[in-house]
Length: 370
Ligand code: SAH
Image (cartoon, rainbow, N blue to C red; front, side):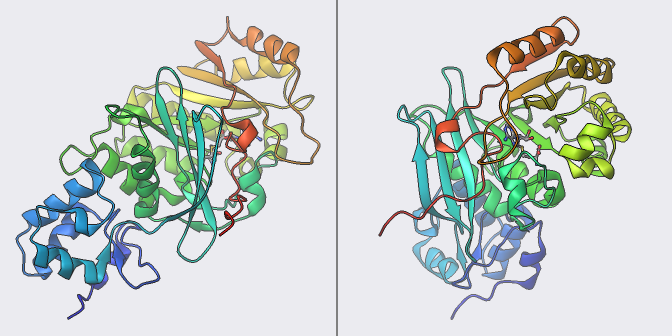
């Protein structure tokens, strides 16, 4: 007899996404829900914990792989449930394979992208939180797609679990940046659900330290406050990109709702509550925000905040009036900041050539020929 999923599952944290075959994705479900599902199947709750271990600690791709579950239980479970709901439909890699952009189809169609990045020092996965984005930042390819839908906790954690399988043998540590498609803090519950599975204590979680995770936001003030007040220990990055309301509102319409004064207050609150410094991301766009006067405004704006400024030379996203400044202008801008701000880095995005860099993700990868 087919197993009827309990109705409660579908409303949990965006997890338990129902796939086209009608089976419910086990990825993203809270541990308590897994236990209840197993109880519903006449099993002991510890079976739910075993499944969580397979999903997050061991990275099982399907129910059949869960070999410490009795065969009959695996078959019964597989009638109503599955592991994962994304399908890899495209992939671009740099010749050295250090940057890999993976296109993953969501069940109803459409592609979200996840990026694997290796440097000599670390591995970082850039994950998407939404398909599309409704914030319409002028410089961002995802912003041009328009509002799409929230990804479920399962769809978010699945991106990380898939990329984890690509780590070289013996490597277990990685970083996660919520800097792919979408605005993570607009999809708060699902993002927290997914990150909870990644940071959960093994064996039922993947055991990643929270400091290895960075959440990047356009600056949603209420959610920044909530993040701080709930005691999450993730790193916070703010997409700032301009140090005056006038310019920021032009580049990022969200600034009309949450202007700089409110944003800075929320960031200060977050720094106080978490004891972690914040990162301000600042895309440098030629003649728009890249002269030394802009740098001076920026230094004044963040003067009281323990922070790092990440200067990101603009990555081209097709025809438009924005350009990346010359090396000379990038150098002058950052050199002005260095003595005035605690930490400044210039981030040359990896993967510009394969459209995998900051701001370039738009799910526009083509399906490979069949
Ligand atoms: N919505 C969140 C998460 C996406 S992060 C946020 O905006 O923070 C993507 C990062 O890439 C952000 O810092 C974004 O501002 C930056 N970005 C967007 N377009 C870019 C471009 N064309 N060149 C360089 N960085 C860009």
